[in-house]
Length: 357
Ligand SMILES: *Cc1c(COP(=O)(O)O)cnc(C)c1O
Image 1 (cartoon, helix red, strand yellow):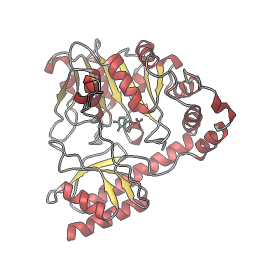
Image 2 (cartoon, protein in one colour):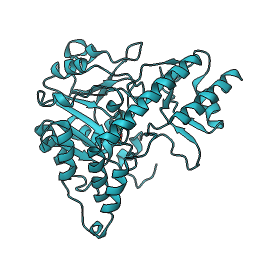
Image 3 (tube, rainbow, N blue to C red):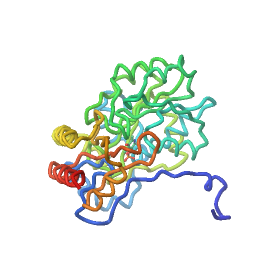
């Protein structure tokens, strides 16, 4: 606490990002980055953009990028909002679209940034418990069960469980709440989920958020976006233009457009991750782990006999970092990002040693 802080600062509980260690040669499976680098065309585009024009501000409305996203999504450019990572997009979504008299509803086990934004913006929220198998219970998000929510947000696939809802289930939630905004955070959808982007033309209350950080291998570039009705996007623009007119810099826009255009590289690398995920899941199961079915680039696994925090520490001693959350219901799980085949081999060998010892 400092006497110079605004009163709100002391009340905040900030998000704690996964560790970004300075050490080289670690097997880093803790923050769901893509194991393969971005498309060579992305690097080329960024190099080409690194010129004298950096003295100029970028396009405040990121038209090229919004058009590239709109083309991929099959919508109009005025149905696309872009931001400095989807975390920034989500921040604007919370303030612009999720703050209402009735509480916002999201799962009890989910992306831990959601309650942080609620704290920052003074948004009331309530959580709906995941089922025993860690799936989202669709009925919890329909007005019948718990009354009308002020708004709804959930990731699909969910984080950190990796479990996905079918598109039909997502549509039931969207169709069942015509007077409330429903935000589907699709950070991991390209690794096996079904995107709800195709529904935005039919539902003006649906906003789909995606990022280039995970499936496009661009966590370091900071580009995320939302797709929804022009009315929702307009609300987001009003907040964005009250905050920062230029969230997407010139290099980020050049790289992001190139990434969205290189569909061949995108498909090749995301399929590689999906294949490695199957092998990693089978390897963990052979070691006795229970692994939740994952549609993401990570798995959520627990060992029936070994304490998860102890396992994470033992892996760390062997230079392998995974994520462990000290939260109720999930403190015996490890969230392990799908790495390269070589990294997964190292992980499985290390776990075999630890479990024997
Ligand atoms: C990673 C992640 C994000 C944020 O990604 P950005 O890097 O900020 O685009 C948003 N939602 C979920 C569920 C995530 O896992």
